[in-house]
Amino acid sequence: MATRSLPEIIQGGMGIGASSIRLAKTVSKAGYLGVVSGTAVATTLARRLQDIKGRKKYVDAVNQFPFPEVSKRIIEKYVPDSHIEKIKARFRPMVMPSLDQPDHLTELMVVANFVEVYLAKKGHDGLIGINLLEKIQLPTLPSLYGAMLAGVDYVLMGAGIPKHIPGILTKFANHEAASMPIKVAGATEPVLSTFDPKAFSESAELVDIKRPQFLAIIASTTLALHLSRNEESRPDGFVVEMPIAGGHNAPPRGKLQVNENGEPIYGERDEVDLTVLKEIGLPFWLAGGYGNYEAYVYAKAQGAAGIQVGTAFAFSKESGMIRSLKERIIRAVKRGAAHVKTDLLASPTGFPFKVVELSNTTGVEKTYKERKRVCDIGYLREAYLKDDGKIGYRCPSEPVDAYVRKGGKLEDTVGRKCLCNGLIATIGYGQERKDSKEMPIVTAGDDLKYILAFLKPGELIYSALDVLKTILGQAFSPTSLKIA
Image (cartoon, rainbow, N blue to C red; front, side):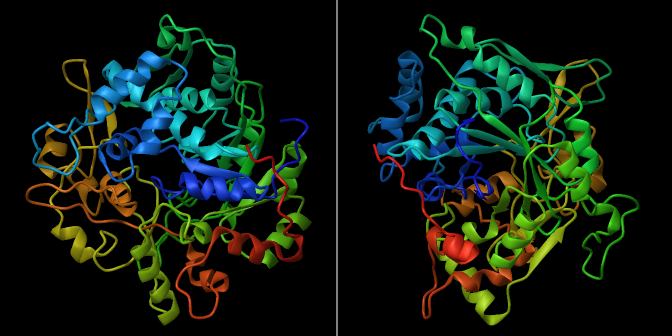
């Protein structure tokens, strides 16, 4: 890693599967940092293995996992035999993540992250990263280990304070067990999640793995200074994300104020002081509204190593989003009818979340209200301490009565959207039940309105290379990469 130059473009890690294997590979082969999303990939892999049309490459990738007995168990459990009776849903129900989850789910988490990175890296020697969320804690350790087994080059993490990740990566690279604290509402003593590579490998021989670079996604110099103070939490660089970026945003600092649409208002306190950031001495990339040539030039002039771009790539033909959704949104942009709302209530995490208001998606009130509340994926559930001292799990977007029965506040359920089911539906793997069908939810940054710059006349889709060429201008120079 030390001999390679820093990538000028980081393709953002978006949603669940929107930052697809194909997209990451395309960007990487052009000489930049392609990134796959590590969010809920255990669920998406399980569903892909059940999809007879496209599962072969995933089955083949699972069989490349370095511990064959684990691969065998995954195939036997998640690839259905032809004689299995049809269940009353498109995909089989799965156990949800928890501190005491069964071994087969932990194995699936490790293998799923391996598969994403393995397939994205297959056939070239470009850089591949994986994006995770600090807010989704339970899968973090197995996810990191699985990605490292596949040789991931970068790990990126935001939506919280990822101070434990650098130390965890170092321990895993040395085949040492690692632990991280899990937030448990009501707990007065630390609750830890632990993963031991040696225990996971059972009798298999441990394989050599490298330590990837870690980039912390931040929205303030305060957090950058906090993370850089000691070796255990010090990242290898920062992605500085502005509040107009898609997905989850950091809440505004200070007293919350909203505009006429109920969206948070960001002010001077939310601006990142790049002078302070440069003094830390770590490379940084600017993100959120940087998907154009002028912004790229500005970022470089400010001392940034480059930029991270999400929205522009999200609507490229290589992204994992259903093509019909991309085309509907591009048509709406052409009409001037595409609106992105910074929704204070949508995410169960409590963080502001960008939602594209598009009909027949849960980003609009009508479709959201028509959806029957179901929580059957569970990555955004909150752990809490029950009266009997045991740990339970709840989500403000689950059925209201269930959430309140678990000690949750009724007011916290208002406006909450099921991002797990919605984002998986956005990439074509939404659950279809006997009495309901999950509808997509689309996230994008405020600069969605500028994606027309990547389109050729008369077309409704563009490529990831069109994005790179437009943003970089004459600076675009695809690296000649070794093709395996």
